[in-house]
Each structure stands twice: as C-alpha cells, then as structure tokens.
Image 1: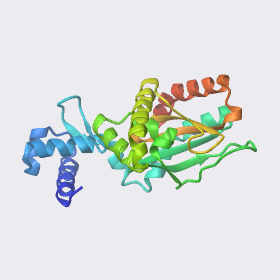
Image 2: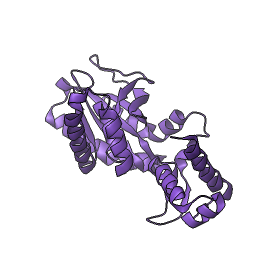
Image 3: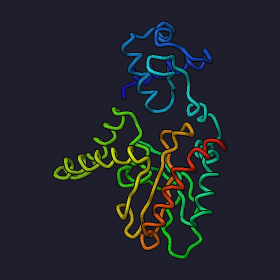
Image 4: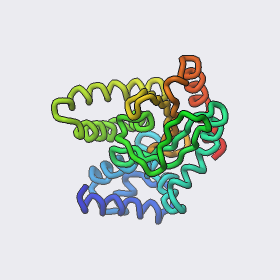
Length: 245
C-alpha cells in the first residue's frame, strides 16, 4: 500500500471521528476533498477490514466498534473479554483446549488459550502463528470475508507454496472456504499437527470479523458423536457470546 493511499484512508477515518456520526459517500467526498471513485475504494477496503460499517447497500458510513477497541489497553484483552464466556462454556462442556485466534496478514495469531485438564493434549501458546489456510481458525475467518479481500489472501497464502503446488492448493482452498461458509464452521484434521483436529467458528456476531474461536481435540477423542455434539454447541453458543458482551 502506498503512502498516498494511507493518507487518504486516515483522512476519511479522521473525518468520521471528528463528525462523530454516519456520513454518506457524498459528504465524505466533500469533507475529505477526494475524488468520488477514490473515496469509494478506500471506504470499501476499510469496511472489508472491519474498521468502518455501512448502513446497507449505498448507505452512510461510520466508525466501527473494532476501530474504537484499538484505543483500549490491548486489543487481545478487549476481544478476549467479549468471547471468554463462550470459551469457558465450551471448555466446561467438553474439557478440550479452546483457542482464540486473530487473522494478521496471511497468518493466524493465537491470542488466548484455555487448556484441557486431560493428560494427552496439544497446546499452542499465545503469540504463536500459523498460516491461515492450515488452521480451522483461519478458514473460519477468511471464509466469511467479502470476495475481494478473501481472494487477495488466498493468492498470497498460496504464493508461499512451491510453484508446482500453487494451482492445486488454490483450487482446494477455494472449495474448502466455500464449504466452510456454507456450513458455518471450519474443520481441520491433522493438517497443522499430527493427531489433532480442530473446529472453529468466526466471531462476526461480536463485531470481530478477523477473530475466531476453535476447540482442539486429539483425534482418538473425536468420534462422530463427540464431533457432532461439539459442532452443535459451537454453532448454538455464538449468539450467547454476543448477548453477554
């Protein structure tokens, strides 16, 4: 991203902050003195990233709760406080490791972990990172992003693979993201760690489109009945997390 684009982005954010309410595209163009097509493209990117919200197609724009959370002491802490009730309920119900992850560039960064008390376990420490497409957390987030930023992330992630593998990886990843979006959760089995499976759901309901929660389970403790119960619990409890925030 060029310096000029950054300047235009911050100009729009500063106007929205100064006005303290929603502004139409025409109003922002007038305030920022930007060409309408330029302002529209910048706003679309800011909206896709979750820093600006729009009231319906063609509606006014305003700053999101996510942008406001950057001013809090630690974004991880702010998101963790929102989602901790859900994580604790999943841990209590299944006694498996529950993870909070953030999408950063093409990586998932682990922000918080509640460990299982069972002897056989795999624990990822907060701060660790994995490529998004190898994790359930990453797939859950990227599957629900708008088309353009999703395509950019897929292209960049596949670019990390050897050239001869990129086309097949891209095709496989696009299919998996579509399936993930359709069913509402992501599933990953032994792709990041041998012997471990993960199920993840995104946190859009909490106003955090770039975060997700997963449960990690050793595959020998993951029969069909347990898998079904866990998926049901994760899908049913997303609204409870939003309500408790």
